[in-house]
Image (cartoon, rainbow, N blue to C red; front, side, top):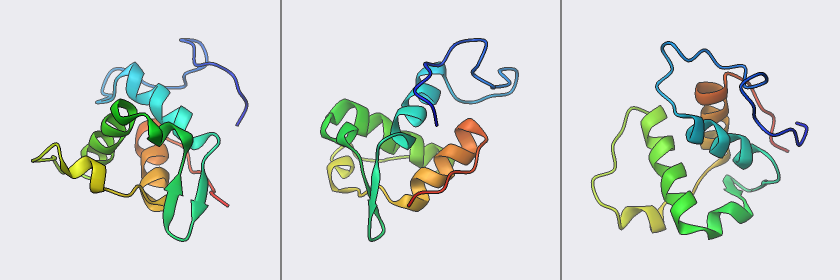
Length: 99
């Protein structure tokens, strides 16, 4: 995926029935660039930023039809390769391959 910033012209998103925000889409695009897989966990420098990781975990739960009940859970949750693939498919409408 190229390092092209998201714009209205290249977002490739249908906004009429889209439950995701512009920020959700930008976050997922950021996550699928530059991460790496270790066993079943997906590791990304972005996860060092607690606010972004919290937003990402909530978004993962949203795509799975779940809701976080306690904020403290977020620190303990590991983001998997499967989670990132689901996010890319649900939020961006694309299939990604993570090596």
